[in-house]
Length: 564
Image (cartoon, rainbow, N blue to C red):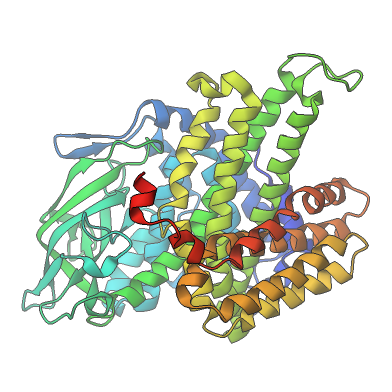
Protein backbone atom coordinates (compact mmCIF):
# COMPACT_ATOMS: atom_id res chain seq x y z
CA UNK A 1 0.00 0.00 0.00
CA UNK A 2 1.30 3.45 -0.86
CA UNK A 3 1.55 6.19 1.77
CA UNK A 4 -1.46 8.50 2.22
CA UNK A 5 -0.76 11.93 3.73
CA UNK A 6 -3.12 12.55 6.71
CA UNK A 7 -3.92 16.14 5.77
CA UNK A 8 -7.44 16.01 7.17
CA UNK A 9 -6.08 14.78 10.51
CA UNK A 10 -3.69 17.73 10.75
CA UNK A 11 -6.53 20.12 9.98
CA UNK A 12 -8.81 18.51 12.57
CA UNK A 13 -6.13 18.76 15.26
CA UNK A 14 -5.33 22.34 14.36
CA UNK A 15 -9.00 23.35 14.45
CA UNK A 16 -10.32 21.35 17.41
CA UNK A 17 -7.43 20.28 19.66
CA UNK A 18 -4.37 22.57 19.66
CA UNK A 19 -5.94 25.97 18.97
CA UNK A 20 -4.28 26.94 15.71
CA UNK A 21 -6.78 29.80 15.43
CA UNK A 22 -4.81 31.63 18.15
CA UNK A 23 -1.75 31.59 15.88
CA UNK A 24 -3.63 32.91 12.85
CA UNK A 25 -5.08 35.67 15.05
CA UNK A 26 -1.62 37.18 15.61
CA UNK A 27 -0.25 39.89 13.36
CA UNK A 28 2.87 37.89 12.57
CA UNK A 29 0.98 34.86 11.29
CA UNK A 30 -2.19 36.50 9.99
CA UNK A 31 -1.68 34.90 6.58
CA UNK A 32 -1.92 31.39 8.05
CA UNK A 33 -5.65 31.17 7.40
CA UNK A 34 -7.34 27.76 7.22
CA UNK A 35 -7.55 28.08 3.43
CA UNK A 36 -3.84 28.88 3.09
CA UNK A 37 -2.83 26.09 5.46
CA UNK A 38 -5.08 23.64 3.59
CA UNK A 39 -3.52 24.55 0.26
CA UNK A 40 0.05 24.28 1.57
CA UNK A 41 -0.53 20.97 3.35
CA UNK A 42 -2.38 19.48 0.40
CA UNK A 43 0.45 20.24 -2.02
CA UNK A 44 3.10 19.02 0.42
CA UNK A 45 1.12 15.84 1.01
CA UNK A 46 0.85 15.21 -2.70
CA UNK A 47 4.61 15.59 -3.09
CA UNK A 48 5.24 13.22 -0.17
CA UNK A 49 2.91 10.59 -1.64
CA UNK A 50 3.94 10.80 -5.28
CA UNK A 51 7.59 11.85 -5.28
CA UNK A 52 9.18 10.93 -1.96
CA UNK A 53 7.47 7.71 -0.83
CA UNK A 54 8.76 5.73 -3.85
CA UNK A 55 12.34 6.65 -2.80
CA UNK A 56 12.16 5.11 0.67
CA UNK A 57 12.99 1.56 -0.37
CA UNK A 58 15.65 2.69 -2.85
CA UNK A 59 17.52 4.51 -0.08
CA UNK A 60 17.49 1.38 2.07
CA UNK A 61 18.65 -0.99 -0.66
CA UNK A 62 21.20 1.35 -2.26
CA UNK A 63 22.83 3.33 0.57
CA UNK A 64 24.79 6.53 0.20
CA UNK A 65 28.47 5.79 -0.38
CA UNK A 66 31.80 7.59 -0.27
CA UNK A 67 33.61 7.40 -3.61
CA UNK A 68 37.01 9.07 -4.06
CA UNK A 69 36.17 11.61 -1.37
CA UNK A 70 32.73 12.37 -2.85
CA UNK A 71 29.44 11.31 -1.26
CA UNK A 72 27.20 9.62 -3.81
CA UNK A 73 23.58 9.66 -2.69
CA UNK A 74 20.89 7.02 -3.21
CA UNK A 75 19.04 6.74 -6.54
CA UNK A 76 16.36 9.38 -6.94
CA UNK A 77 17.35 11.37 -3.86
CA UNK A 78 18.57 14.30 -5.94
CA UNK A 79 15.16 14.57 -7.64
CA UNK A 80 13.39 14.14 -4.31
CA UNK A 81 15.43 16.87 -2.67
CA UNK A 82 14.81 19.14 -5.64
CA UNK A 83 11.06 18.66 -5.20
CA UNK A 84 11.34 19.61 -1.52
CA UNK A 85 13.46 22.69 -2.29
CA UNK A 86 11.41 23.90 -5.26
CA UNK A 87 8.22 23.51 -3.24
CA UNK A 88 9.71 25.85 -0.63
CA UNK A 89 9.52 23.16 2.06
CA UNK A 90 13.13 23.37 3.23
CA UNK A 91 12.36 26.52 5.21
CA UNK A 92 8.72 27.46 4.89
CA UNK A 93 8.83 29.15 8.32
CA UNK A 94 11.96 31.19 7.61
CA UNK A 95 12.04 34.99 7.61
CA UNK A 96 10.58 36.42 4.35
CA UNK A 97 13.51 38.85 4.28
CA UNK A 98 15.68 35.91 3.24
CA UNK A 99 13.20 34.14 0.98
CA UNK A 100 11.09 32.21 3.49
CA UNK A 101 7.30 32.34 3.63
CA UNK A 102 7.19 33.19 7.32
CA UNK A 103 4.52 30.56 7.99
CA UNK A 104 4.11 29.16 11.51
CA UNK A 105 6.20 26.33 12.92
CA UNK A 106 2.96 24.38 13.29
CA UNK A 107 2.70 24.25 9.48
CA UNK A 108 6.34 23.21 9.15
CA UNK A 109 5.70 20.50 11.74
CA UNK A 110 2.90 18.97 9.70
CA UNK A 111 4.95 19.14 6.49
CA UNK A 112 7.99 17.61 8.18
CA UNK A 113 5.89 14.71 9.42
CA UNK A 114 4.59 13.91 5.94
CA UNK A 115 8.08 14.03 4.44
CA UNK A 116 9.41 11.83 7.27
CA UNK A 117 6.62 9.31 6.70
CA UNK A 118 7.44 9.17 3.02
CA UNK A 119 11.25 8.97 3.26
CA UNK A 120 12.91 9.53 6.62
CA UNK A 121 16.46 9.25 5.26
CA UNK A 122 15.92 12.18 2.92
CA UNK A 123 13.83 14.23 5.37
CA UNK A 124 16.76 14.41 7.76
CA UNK A 125 18.55 16.68 5.28
CA UNK A 126 16.14 19.65 5.27
CA UNK A 127 15.53 19.18 9.01
CA UNK A 128 19.21 19.93 9.70
CA UNK A 129 19.05 22.96 7.43
CA UNK A 130 15.95 24.28 9.21
CA UNK A 131 17.78 24.16 12.52
CA UNK A 132 20.79 25.95 11.09
CA UNK A 133 18.59 28.66 9.62
CA UNK A 134 17.01 29.32 13.02
CA UNK A 135 20.40 29.42 14.73
CA UNK A 136 21.75 31.92 12.18
CA UNK A 137 18.59 34.06 12.31
CA UNK A 138 18.99 34.38 16.07
CA UNK A 139 22.77 34.55 16.56
CA UNK A 140 24.72 35.32 13.38
CA UNK A 141 26.02 38.70 12.22
CA UNK A 142 24.12 40.62 9.56
CA UNK A 143 26.86 39.83 7.05
CA UNK A 144 26.57 36.09 7.61
CA UNK A 145 22.78 36.27 7.46
CA UNK A 146 22.82 38.19 4.19
CA UNK A 147 25.18 35.72 2.52
CA UNK A 148 24.05 32.35 3.89
CA UNK A 149 20.36 32.55 4.71
CA UNK A 150 19.00 33.09 1.17
CA UNK A 151 21.02 30.08 -0.04
CA UNK A 152 19.93 27.86 2.85
CA UNK A 153 16.29 28.93 2.62
CA UNK A 154 16.14 28.25 -1.11
CA UNK A 155 17.75 24.85 -0.65
CA UNK A 156 20.69 25.71 -2.89
CA UNK A 157 22.92 25.06 0.15
CA UNK A 158 22.30 22.67 3.01
CA UNK A 159 23.28 22.83 6.69
CA UNK A 160 24.59 20.44 9.33
CA UNK A 161 25.36 20.53 13.05
CA UNK A 162 28.73 19.25 14.35
CA UNK A 163 28.79 18.52 18.07
CA UNK A 164 29.93 14.97 18.72
CA UNK A 165 33.54 13.79 18.84
CA UNK A 166 34.88 10.28 19.55
CA UNK A 167 35.53 11.17 23.21
CA UNK A 168 32.72 13.74 23.58
CA UNK A 169 29.18 12.52 22.99
CA UNK A 170 26.52 13.76 25.37
CA UNK A 171 29.37 15.32 27.38
CA UNK A 172 29.89 18.06 24.81
CA UNK A 173 32.23 19.95 27.14
CA UNK A 174 34.89 17.27 26.60
CA UNK A 175 35.40 18.25 22.96
CA UNK A 176 38.94 18.88 21.66
CA UNK A 177 38.27 20.74 18.41
CA UNK A 178 39.97 24.11 18.39
CA UNK A 179 39.72 27.40 16.53
CA UNK A 180 42.63 29.80 16.05
CA UNK A 181 42.11 33.42 14.94
CA UNK A 182 43.46 34.09 11.45
CA UNK A 183 43.75 37.84 12.07
CA UNK A 184 41.24 38.77 9.38
CA UNK A 185 38.01 38.01 11.23
CA UNK A 186 38.03 34.35 10.29
CA UNK A 187 39.20 31.34 12.28
CA UNK A 188 41.15 28.17 11.49
CA UNK A 189 39.06 25.27 12.78
CA UNK A 190 40.76 21.94 13.45
CA UNK A 191 39.31 18.72 14.82
CA UNK A 192 37.28 15.61 14.07
CA UNK A 193 33.51 15.28 14.40
CA UNK A 194 31.48 12.07 14.17
CA UNK A 195 27.84 11.14 13.50
CA UNK A 196 27.30 14.13 11.21
CA UNK A 197 23.98 13.59 9.46
CA UNK A 198 24.14 14.55 5.80
CA UNK A 199 27.75 15.70 6.22
CA UNK A 200 27.93 15.94 2.44
CA UNK A 201 25.86 15.30 -0.68
CA UNK A 202 26.16 15.43 -4.47
CA UNK A 203 23.04 17.46 -5.25
CA UNK A 204 23.53 20.90 -3.67
CA UNK A 205 26.03 23.61 -4.47
CA UNK A 206 27.44 23.84 -0.94
CA UNK A 207 27.19 22.27 2.52
CA UNK A 208 27.48 24.57 5.54
CA UNK A 209 28.64 23.13 8.85
CA UNK A 210 27.96 24.63 12.26
CA UNK A 211 30.92 23.43 14.32
CA UNK A 212 31.54 23.64 18.05
CA UNK A 213 35.19 24.33 18.90
CA UNK A 214 37.27 26.01 21.58
CA UNK A 215 39.14 29.30 21.17
CA UNK A 216 42.66 29.56 22.64
CA UNK A 217 41.29 31.44 25.67
CA UNK A 218 38.23 29.23 26.02
CA UNK A 219 37.90 27.73 29.47
CA UNK A 220 37.14 24.07 30.21
CA UNK A 221 33.68 22.55 29.87
CA UNK A 222 30.75 23.87 27.90
CA UNK A 223 31.21 27.48 29.04
CA UNK A 224 34.37 27.79 26.98
CA UNK A 225 32.93 26.57 23.68
CA UNK A 226 32.28 28.75 20.64
CA UNK A 227 30.28 28.13 17.47
CA UNK A 228 31.65 28.51 13.95
CA UNK A 229 30.11 28.42 10.49
CA UNK A 230 32.43 26.38 8.29
CA UNK A 231 31.31 25.93 4.66
CA UNK A 232 32.50 23.04 2.52
CA UNK A 233 33.28 25.53 -0.25
CA UNK A 234 34.33 29.08 0.57
CA UNK A 235 31.78 31.56 -0.80
CA UNK A 236 32.84 33.95 -3.54
CA UNK A 237 32.17 37.67 -3.41
CA UNK A 238 29.02 37.26 -5.49
CA UNK A 239 27.68 34.55 -3.18
CA UNK A 240 28.60 31.49 -5.20
CA UNK A 241 30.46 28.43 -3.94
CA UNK A 242 34.18 28.93 -4.52
CA UNK A 243 37.30 26.95 -3.66
CA UNK A 244 37.20 23.92 -1.42
CA UNK A 245 37.73 24.51 2.28
CA UNK A 246 40.23 22.48 4.34
CA UNK A 247 37.77 19.82 5.42
CA UNK A 248 36.76 16.38 4.22
CA UNK A 249 34.52 13.41 4.81
CA UNK A 250 36.77 10.71 6.26
CA UNK A 251 34.19 7.92 6.13
CA UNK A 252 30.50 7.12 6.26
CA UNK A 253 29.06 5.07 9.12
CA UNK A 254 27.54 1.62 8.47
CA UNK A 255 24.23 1.82 10.32
CA UNK A 256 21.30 -0.30 11.44
CA UNK A 257 18.96 1.86 9.37
CA UNK A 258 18.63 5.22 7.61
CA UNK A 259 20.92 3.83 4.91
CA UNK A 260 19.99 6.59 2.48
CA UNK A 261 21.20 9.28 4.91
CA UNK A 262 25.02 9.65 4.82
CA UNK A 263 26.30 9.88 8.41
CA UNK A 264 29.82 11.24 8.14
CA UNK A 265 33.04 11.37 10.09
CA UNK A 266 34.25 14.91 9.36
CA UNK A 267 37.86 16.10 9.54
CA UNK A 268 38.70 19.81 9.79
CA UNK A 269 42.34 20.77 9.17
CA UNK A 270 42.60 24.51 9.73
CA UNK A 271 39.35 25.00 7.84
CA UNK A 272 38.21 28.60 7.47
CA UNK A 273 35.22 29.44 9.63
CA UNK A 274 33.31 32.43 10.94
CA UNK A 275 32.25 32.95 14.54
CA UNK A 276 28.49 32.73 15.14
CA UNK A 277 27.37 34.63 18.22
CA UNK A 278 29.71 35.74 20.99
CA UNK A 279 33.00 34.02 21.88
CA UNK A 280 32.57 31.19 24.40
CA UNK A 281 28.78 31.31 23.98
CA UNK A 282 28.53 28.57 21.40
CA UNK A 283 26.27 26.30 23.39
CA UNK A 284 23.60 29.00 23.66
CA UNK A 285 23.56 29.36 19.88
CA UNK A 286 23.73 25.62 19.29
CA UNK A 287 20.84 25.02 21.69
CA UNK A 288 18.66 27.15 19.41
CA UNK A 289 19.35 24.61 16.68
CA UNK A 290 19.08 21.64 19.03
CA UNK A 291 15.69 22.66 20.43
CA UNK A 292 14.41 23.07 16.89
CA UNK A 293 15.81 19.63 16.09
CA UNK A 294 14.25 18.05 19.21
CA UNK A 295 10.79 18.99 18.02
CA UNK A 296 11.79 17.87 14.53
CA UNK A 297 13.02 14.48 15.73
CA UNK A 298 9.85 13.91 17.75
CA UNK A 299 8.01 14.60 14.51
CA UNK A 300 10.19 12.04 12.72
CA UNK A 301 9.02 9.42 15.21
CA UNK A 302 5.39 10.29 14.54
CA UNK A 303 6.00 10.24 10.78
CA UNK A 304 7.41 6.72 10.88
CA UNK A 305 4.61 5.62 13.22
CA UNK A 306 2.03 6.81 10.68
CA UNK A 307 3.76 5.06 7.79
CA UNK A 308 4.28 1.82 9.75
CA UNK A 309 0.63 1.84 10.85
CA UNK A 310 -0.65 2.33 7.31
CA UNK A 311 1.64 -0.48 6.11
CA UNK A 312 0.48 -2.88 8.84
CA UNK A 313 -3.20 -2.03 8.38
CA UNK A 314 -2.99 -2.70 4.65
CA UNK A 315 -1.38 -6.08 5.29
CA UNK A 316 -3.95 -7.02 7.96
CA UNK A 317 -6.81 -6.19 5.59
CA UNK A 318 -5.44 -8.59 2.97
CA UNK A 319 -3.79 -11.42 4.92
CA UNK A 320 -5.90 -14.53 5.46
CA UNK A 321 -4.71 -16.72 8.31
CA UNK A 322 -6.72 -18.84 10.71
CA UNK A 323 -10.35 -18.37 11.62
CA UNK A 324 -11.59 -15.44 13.59
CA UNK A 325 -14.50 -15.83 16.02
CA UNK A 326 -15.86 -12.68 14.42
CA UNK A 327 -18.42 -13.90 11.92
CA UNK A 328 -17.90 -12.87 8.33
CA UNK A 329 -14.27 -11.81 8.81
CA UNK A 330 -11.78 -13.60 6.58
CA UNK A 331 -8.55 -11.67 7.18
CA UNK A 332 -6.38 -11.30 10.28
CA UNK A 333 -8.02 -7.93 10.86
CA UNK A 334 -10.80 -9.93 12.50
CA UNK A 335 -8.51 -11.38 15.19
CA UNK A 336 -8.88 -9.59 18.52
CA UNK A 337 -5.14 -9.40 19.17
CA UNK A 338 -4.43 -7.90 15.75
CA UNK A 339 -7.15 -5.32 16.33
CA UNK A 340 -5.64 -4.60 19.76
CA UNK A 341 -2.28 -3.86 18.17
CA UNK A 342 -3.65 -1.74 15.34
CA UNK A 343 -5.92 0.26 17.65
CA UNK A 344 -3.03 0.96 20.03
CA UNK A 345 -0.82 1.97 17.10
CA UNK A 346 -3.42 4.44 15.82
CA UNK A 347 -4.23 5.83 19.28
CA UNK A 348 -0.59 6.43 20.28
CA UNK A 349 0.21 8.00 16.91
CA UNK A 350 -2.73 10.39 17.33
CA UNK A 351 -1.56 11.39 20.83
CA UNK A 352 2.05 11.91 19.75
CA UNK A 353 1.02 13.93 16.68
CA UNK A 354 -1.20 16.17 18.79
CA UNK A 355 1.72 16.76 21.15
CA UNK A 356 4.02 17.88 18.33
CA UNK A 357 1.40 20.34 17.10
CA UNK A 358 0.65 21.58 20.62
CA UNK A 359 4.36 22.31 21.10
CA UNK A 360 4.60 23.99 17.68
CA UNK A 361 1.61 26.22 18.47
CA UNK A 362 3.24 27.25 21.77
CA UNK A 363 6.45 28.11 19.89
CA UNK A 364 4.48 30.12 17.33
CA UNK A 365 2.60 32.08 19.98
CA UNK A 366 5.79 32.79 21.93
CA UNK A 367 7.48 34.09 18.77
CA UNK A 368 4.47 36.10 17.61
CA UNK A 369 3.54 37.73 20.90
CA UNK A 370 6.57 37.44 23.18
CA UNK A 371 4.33 35.65 25.67
CA UNK A 372 6.64 34.33 28.40
CA UNK A 373 3.98 31.85 29.49
CA UNK A 374 3.93 30.27 26.04
CA UNK A 375 7.73 30.18 25.95
CA UNK A 376 7.75 28.34 29.29
CA UNK A 377 5.12 25.92 28.00
CA UNK A 378 7.19 25.24 24.87
CA UNK A 379 10.32 24.64 26.93
CA UNK A 380 8.49 22.17 29.18
CA UNK A 381 6.87 20.27 26.30
CA UNK A 382 10.05 19.98 24.20
CA UNK A 383 11.71 17.03 26.01
CA UNK A 384 8.34 15.26 26.34
CA UNK A 385 7.67 15.69 22.63
CA UNK A 386 11.10 14.43 21.58
CA UNK A 387 11.00 11.36 23.82
CA UNK A 388 7.33 10.41 23.45
CA UNK A 389 7.30 11.04 19.71
CA UNK A 390 10.30 8.80 19.09
CA UNK A 391 9.27 6.13 21.62
CA UNK A 392 5.92 6.01 19.84
CA UNK A 393 7.61 5.67 16.46
CA UNK A 394 9.68 2.73 17.71
CA UNK A 395 6.76 1.03 19.48
CA UNK A 396 4.43 1.40 16.50
CA UNK A 397 7.05 0.21 14.01
CA UNK A 398 7.77 -2.77 16.27
CA UNK A 399 4.06 -3.58 16.49
CA UNK A 400 3.92 -3.28 12.70
CA UNK A 401 6.47 -6.08 12.40
CA UNK A 402 4.35 -8.16 14.80
CA UNK A 403 1.16 -7.58 12.80
CA UNK A 404 2.99 -8.95 9.76
CA UNK A 405 3.99 -12.05 11.72
CA UNK A 406 6.81 -14.01 10.11
CA UNK A 407 6.59 -11.81 7.02
CA UNK A 408 7.51 -8.83 9.19
CA UNK A 409 10.91 -10.38 9.77
CA UNK A 410 11.43 -10.71 6.01
CA UNK A 411 12.97 -7.58 4.52
CA UNK A 412 10.98 -7.73 1.29
CA UNK A 413 7.74 -6.71 3.01
CA UNK A 414 9.29 -3.39 4.13
CA UNK A 415 7.94 -3.60 7.70
CA UNK A 416 11.40 -4.08 9.20
CA UNK A 417 12.80 -0.97 7.53
CA UNK A 418 10.50 1.30 9.52
CA UNK A 419 11.80 -0.19 12.76
CA UNK A 420 15.44 -0.02 11.68
CA UNK A 421 15.13 3.55 10.42
CA UNK A 422 13.28 4.97 13.43
CA UNK A 423 15.38 3.30 16.13
CA UNK A 424 18.07 6.02 16.13
CA UNK A 425 15.56 8.79 16.82
CA UNK A 426 15.52 7.86 20.51
CA UNK A 427 19.31 8.33 20.52
CA UNK A 428 20.25 11.37 18.47
CA UNK A 429 19.58 15.00 19.41
CA UNK A 430 19.93 13.98 23.05
CA UNK A 431 18.95 10.45 24.10
CA UNK A 432 15.49 10.02 25.54
CA UNK A 433 17.08 9.45 28.93
CA UNK A 434 18.70 12.89 28.66
CA UNK A 435 15.35 14.40 27.65
CA UNK A 436 13.79 12.88 30.76
CA UNK A 437 16.59 14.16 32.99
CA UNK A 438 16.13 17.61 31.45
CA UNK A 439 12.41 17.45 32.24
CA UNK A 440 12.85 16.63 35.93
CA UNK A 441 16.00 18.77 36.27
CA UNK A 442 16.10 22.09 34.38
CA UNK A 443 12.39 22.13 33.64
CA UNK A 444 11.59 21.58 37.34
CA UNK A 445 13.78 24.42 38.58
CA UNK A 446 10.53 26.35 39.03
CA UNK A 447 9.47 23.87 41.70
CA UNK A 448 7.05 22.20 39.29
CA UNK A 449 5.03 25.36 38.57
CA UNK A 450 4.82 24.80 34.79
CA UNK A 451 3.93 21.15 35.30
CA UNK A 452 1.07 22.18 37.57
CA UNK A 453 -0.22 24.72 35.04
CA UNK A 454 -0.40 22.06 32.34
CA UNK A 455 -2.00 19.59 34.74
CA UNK A 456 -4.65 22.23 35.53
CA UNK A 457 -5.41 22.45 31.81
CA UNK A 458 -5.67 18.65 31.51
CA UNK A 459 -7.96 18.56 34.56
CA UNK A 460 -10.29 21.11 32.94
CA UNK A 461 -10.59 18.93 29.85
CA UNK A 462 -11.28 15.85 31.96
CA UNK A 463 -13.98 17.68 33.95
CA UNK A 464 -15.71 18.82 30.76
CA UNK A 465 -16.26 15.31 29.39
CA UNK A 466 -18.40 12.39 30.56
CA UNK A 467 -15.46 10.20 29.51
CA UNK A 468 -13.00 12.08 31.71
CA UNK A 469 -13.04 10.01 34.90
CA UNK A 470 -9.87 8.05 34.22
CA UNK A 471 -8.04 11.19 33.15
CA UNK A 472 -9.10 12.99 36.33
CA UNK A 473 -7.61 10.13 38.36
CA UNK A 474 -4.43 10.34 36.27
CA UNK A 475 -4.07 14.07 36.99
CA UNK A 476 -4.47 13.53 40.73
CA UNK A 477 -1.74 10.86 40.63
CA UNK A 478 0.56 13.05 38.54
CA UNK A 479 0.13 16.00 40.88
CA UNK A 480 1.19 13.86 43.83
CA UNK A 481 4.13 12.39 41.90
CA UNK A 482 5.28 15.85 40.80
CA UNK A 483 5.20 17.11 44.38
CA UNK A 484 7.27 14.11 45.51
CA UNK A 485 9.67 14.52 42.62
CA UNK A 486 10.58 18.14 43.30
CA UNK A 487 11.32 17.25 46.92
CA UNK A 488 13.80 14.50 45.94
CA UNK A 489 17.58 14.68 45.59
CA UNK A 490 18.56 15.04 41.94
CA UNK A 491 19.80 11.47 41.44
CA UNK A 492 16.52 10.15 42.82
CA UNK A 493 14.70 12.36 40.32
CA UNK A 494 16.87 11.03 37.51
CA UNK A 495 16.11 7.42 38.48
CA UNK A 496 12.40 8.03 37.90
CA UNK A 497 12.70 10.51 35.07
CA UNK A 498 11.91 8.18 32.16
CA UNK A 499 8.72 6.74 33.69
CA UNK A 500 7.70 10.25 34.83
CA UNK A 501 8.08 11.66 31.31
CA UNK A 502 6.04 8.83 29.80
CA UNK A 503 3.36 9.21 32.46
CA UNK A 504 3.08 12.93 31.70
CA UNK A 505 2.93 12.17 27.98
CA UNK A 506 0.10 9.68 28.53
CA UNK A 507 -1.86 12.27 30.49
CA UNK A 508 -1.35 14.75 27.66
CA UNK A 509 -2.43 12.05 25.23
CA UNK A 510 -5.66 11.55 27.19
CA UNK A 511 -6.18 15.32 27.14
CA UNK A 512 -5.82 15.49 23.34
CA UNK A 513 -8.02 12.43 22.79
CA UNK A 514 -10.77 13.85 24.99
CA UNK A 515 -10.72 17.19 23.18
CA UNK A 516 -11.02 15.30 19.89
CA UNK A 517 -13.87 13.19 21.27
CA UNK A 518 -15.79 16.28 22.37
CA UNK A 519 -15.43 17.71 18.86
CA UNK A 520 -16.49 14.40 17.26
CA UNK A 521 -18.82 12.87 19.91
CA UNK A 522 -20.44 10.22 17.72
CA UNK A 523 -17.52 9.62 15.37
CA UNK A 524 -14.40 7.49 15.16
CA UNK A 525 -12.30 9.90 17.21
CA UNK A 526 -14.56 9.41 20.24
CA UNK A 527 -14.23 5.64 19.90
CA UNK A 528 -10.45 5.93 19.53
CA UNK A 529 -10.34 8.16 22.61
CA UNK A 530 -12.23 5.57 24.64
CA UNK A 531 -9.70 2.94 23.64
CA UNK A 532 -6.74 5.14 24.63
CA UNK A 533 -8.30 6.03 27.99
CA UNK A 534 -9.17 2.41 28.76
CA UNK A 535 -6.05 0.69 27.47
CA UNK A 536 -3.07 3.09 27.32
CA UNK A 537 -3.76 5.59 30.11
CA UNK A 538 -3.86 3.05 32.99
CA UNK A 539 -0.16 2.39 32.40
CA UNK A 540 0.44 5.79 34.03
CA UNK A 541 -0.18 4.47 37.55
CA UNK A 542 2.46 1.77 37.26
CA UNK A 543 4.92 4.29 35.86
CA UNK A 544 4.39 6.64 38.77
CA UNK A 545 5.00 3.80 41.21
CA UNK A 546 8.50 3.61 39.72
CA UNK A 547 8.96 7.37 40.10
CA UNK A 548 8.38 7.17 43.84
CA UNK A 549 11.13 4.55 44.32
CA UNK A 550 13.99 6.98 43.83
CA UNK A 551 17.46 5.61 43.05
CA UNK A 552 18.32 3.49 46.11
CA UNK A 553 17.12 0.17 44.67
CA UNK A 554 19.14 0.76 41.49
CA UNK A 555 22.33 0.76 43.56
CA UNK A 556 21.33 -2.18 45.76
CA UNK A 557 23.22 -4.43 43.37
CA UNK A 558 26.94 -3.70 43.30
CA UNK A 559 28.94 -3.54 40.08
CA UNK A 560 30.17 -7.05 40.83
CA UNK A 561 26.58 -8.22 41.36
CA UNK A 562 25.70 -6.98 37.89
CA UNK A 563 28.57 -8.94 36.40
CA UNK A 564 27.75 -12.14 38.34
